[in-house]
Picture 1: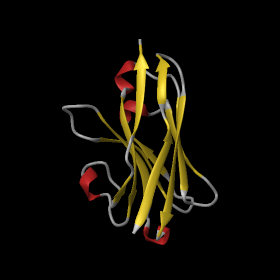
Picture 2: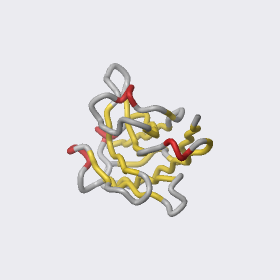
Picture 3: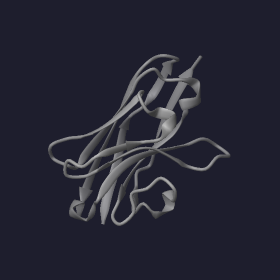
Length: 124
């Protein structure tokens, strides 16, 4: 099993920046990718950014390209999401996830491990 835990988040005004961190522990060798999703009440969870572990490529949802950057630490168990130029539409609970065999955004439930989530609130 893999345990995933997020940190960071909080409240910021429109145009501001925040950074989220996520650390995986346990059987981390099972991970193929790590990523960030977000969810607002009444809507489906959506993928935001992902990265293939071990120095692999990163990928983003169109809505955040150019504003969000995902990075992986050298230990390959921590990923960070740097968010700049935040908009009220970015307000959501942000979840970190780790994938074993599936790393896409089309089926969030196929990701293997999830954190508890952290709130990001952007005010106008």
